[in-house]
Length: 455
Image (cartoon, rainbow, N blue to C red; front, side, top):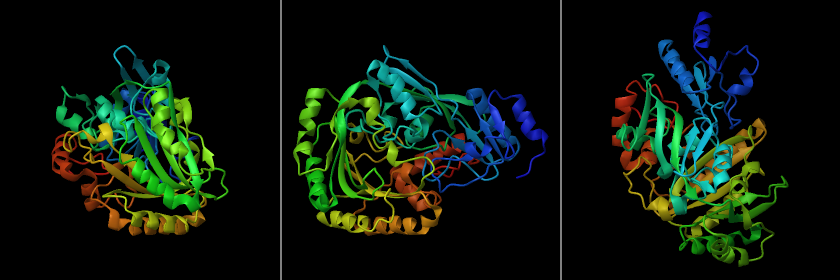
């Protein structure tokens, strides 16, 4: 879309942040998101400094008929954070985190990352369930549900959310909580970015750390069958404090060495944590064991190196009904043919507090004890895109006989977010109520670059 030259100047005049047009220095860097597969060029990037800037940007976009994309951390694999020809509302300068240790509350701006959040909250030995990659945005992860290392003990990120400040499609600033706009508060706890731009998020904090027992063990790929069986048996009965994921992964040194790994974090004391992880440490003959006491801030960075900004990513995931041996055989068979030394097949276990919330209590509906399967295709050279996308799809399709009906909304890729059936699977029985809230707060579907709920 072409705009008169005065239009961006009108926005600049009322803006504390910066407005970048395609000819401006820094524009190309600003439009890049974490997933290197996404290459879109907005007409303008509005780098906001605060809520007033966000409000001005939304109103400007509405007045000029511009499509809106909202960037928090920029991690979403579908690339919702940037659009072609529209206005990219960039919150990446809004990274403030305020902690009230006495009240056990934290407030994070819409562009804060989980690294920012954990750094401030851990000064007081406090935490909320957050992302497993530290550069993930607090807002995006939380609004989609938010799985993380503390979910067995403290629930999903949305279960720790106590209020959200939003700029709505009408350009109004509202606070949504249990007492104010409760319908909107219900919807943002799992309904994604459908209802406005989240400028501040308020969380409840819990005593965690600053040192916890966590880490990973890696076994030779030849032992994958036994490792996966052990993982299934071990996770069948876990204390709430212990969250355990597993996967078929490549060695982090880029050698392409295939491994079967178990990753864990214990949210309680060091002595009980050591006892809880002892069976993991004593199983088999690992080639690497780095499970032990570590700062909680480090737990959320231990897989950062596997997800560098600019790498090309194509993911597919689905919740599983069970973990039979046949599922393990499928995973092993397909991982053996992975064309990239960065790709992996992961299993994320849901239990404890995250599963003791009612299906309709929040918009995030996936509250059953079990596992989520995630096929991560990741590579660096665009020439390898076809081979890696094909591999990811084949691995995912081969696991289909073991799938349940649920999809984790934060993992939907760019192809899937436009599929009504996929979105229905992501929101399950909450779709009807989400549409009603969408009609109330965004009847024109202004915020549609997301896992979209059509009004």
